Image (cartoon, rainbow over all chains, first blue to last red; front, side, top):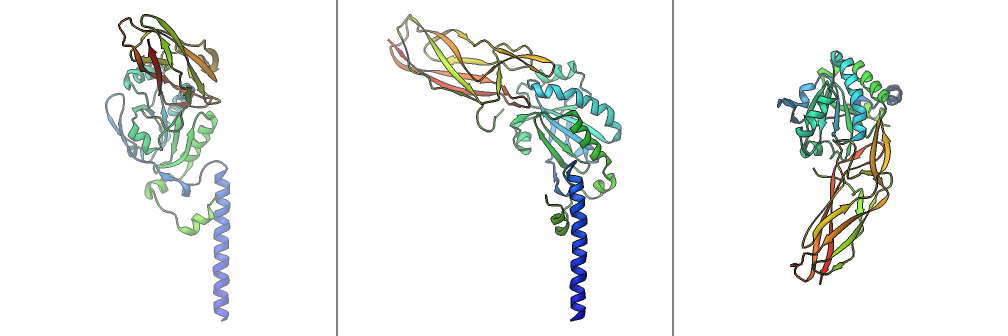
Amino acid sequence: MRKLKTGILLLLSTACIFYSCSNGSSEKTEAASTTSTARKPAPDFTLKDSNGAQVKLSDYRGKVVLLNFWATWCGPCKIEIPWFIDFQQQYKDKGFEVLGVAMDDDGWTSVKPYIAERKVNYRVLLGDDSVATLFGGIDSLPTTFVIDRSGAIDKVHVGLIGKDDYLKEIQGLLAENKATHNRQPYRTMPALFAVGSTR
Amino acid sequence: MAQLGESVAKVAPPETLALKRGSTATQNLRVTLRSGFHVNSDKPKDEFLIPLKLTWTGPLQVQKVVYPKPEEVKVGNDMLNVLTGSFEIQTHFLAPAQATAGVSLMEGKLHYQACDNQSCKRPATLSVQLPVSIQ
């Protein structure tokens, strides 16, 4: 009987310690970004870039990716593009890439002159309805997905947000353990840990 | 490309337009935008922006389409010509002398692209039916 009581107490205390640790960790990370355990894999796709090359999103696994759906006719998108040019320049060598997905109906006719005029230094792909559907329809532009090194979506931004908000998210994801993401992409977290990280 | 969700623009169903063969008539199409949104005018300042455009097909000839005067708003560093709230687009029709008398329909297409301060909706087209009575 005494052994049973001791066993229960030990189990409870272990669970409490684990719960409080993971709960505390969750609160800390939630202030800046969604926790790793809450992330879902980004849907993979293949689209062509302005040179006609086929580009797969999964080719970028191992890098932090800012996937930006935009269009030449979108005013708020135009505001963000210079920020993304800066990010690409600043973090390209640190494992970061911006990928633009243009949703213009007339395709490269509008997009090529636009990106040439603005000296866009990151890869731009031509989007279509099927890719938009994969990402929830993309009803509004800009819509931007911030993706971690494992290919999981950390943040989704619909509409214009601040440059600094993006910067914090990019820096946060770049600081995460690269080895962990490469070793266990799309992993499922144990149930007990998931309870601790519930919002 | 398809647009999801509720339409940003709505048009009031037009009343029957009556006119005699060989004569002209004017129709005002009332367009109302969802609160907080604007659409580009028929002549946006930036070449990449999508203009408001009303087109008609049917038994009447379109002489001209008159769009409302836009307002200027600043988005980022750019000044844009936009329309907000509720406005009217005026179409001047001519019934050809050889038109068949009777009741028929003019089919209208209103192509627009709407934004609010933070984001833009993808371009959309609204269909309008204008009943016409040619005497």
